[in-house]
Length: 288
Image (cartoon, rainbow, N blue to C red; front, top):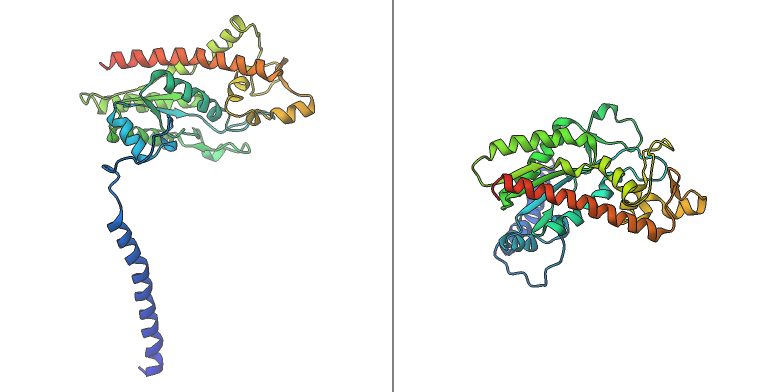
């Protein structure tokens, strides 16, 4: 082999070595210089927050150590909800309901919302309608619950805002309850949370609003709208509907806004009461 043919090979080898050195050394140095966050004292005032993804690792660590060992796994979905509600309707409801339930329970944190519901992905042809297979959905729930248990959470509850999620949550809760028997961990699906029939009755009998959800033929309701508005009115396209003269659903006006927000607040409180009571019963049944 001539010198001319060898030189490019040597240059290539030298270049590869240089790249490896430049990429490996900083990484190794970074690893060596990293603080141990399992023992590192929190240098700032902790946030008042119940959402795990919005807390620092130190904040979660310290809350666990102080006895915050309940966790909620919330499941929503992405689906068609008519011309006014976003596809993430159930996820917006869960932001409001999860906050209320965790605060009422106390010593409770919330895992990131499972925003995709189960179904057949090959038939998810509705624009925006994303689906997990049932196997994937259950695997996600299982892995989330196992992760929470590994960190020290001892009471783990599944709450679903979409009817298609119930079967999968039942299956995973039963599976893990059997697998964790004798380990002093309570895991349960709180079916009482999914109580939209009772919500409709409460809206009629207590709030005085008799709604027929079939009236306009939309996958949309006054009670859903009034809850979502506590997350963000834009998720019900409030401003656009006002400009278009369409600020109503099923013949019920969502104006004035203050009235609708007040109704939503009372509906949230109703659902929170039912859910918290069911969680307490599940904990008692599990010996906690």
